[in-house]
Length: 171
Image (cartoon, rainbow, N blue to C red):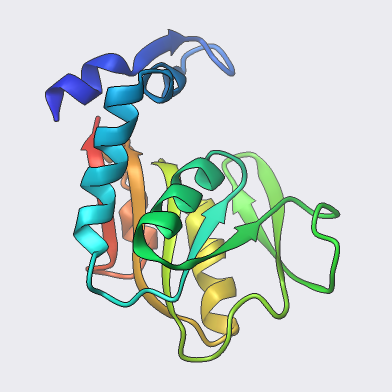
């Protein structure tokens, strides 16, 4: 995995001073690395009969849609307020400084469906914890929360269901 980690570039002081941003676009631009990342993630879930993959705005769409394709599953989008055209269920959650809100279509997940939630990065876990709550409230059975990358020092996995978190690359 070190070869994939080395492709991800660090952007110092983005989006604000003191943060080192992990820029995954360099990995996504490299066709062989992108294919390898997708194949490694998908291999973990082949044969688990996943019904839907939930992708979290916006980079989670990139990871979630290709995983759904590989697994023969449907795709569900979790978006910022006002972006989904039909009736939605929303969840407001705490951020480090303030709050944010996400929405999902009310008819996106049927009770008992096996759900894989995908995003590019696990940091503090706040966004993913909100998505987990929305999936559970719709009756979805969470197979796992999967991430391309994880910033382990932020301990975001502590906010998510125990034993249901996987990250391909850890920093």
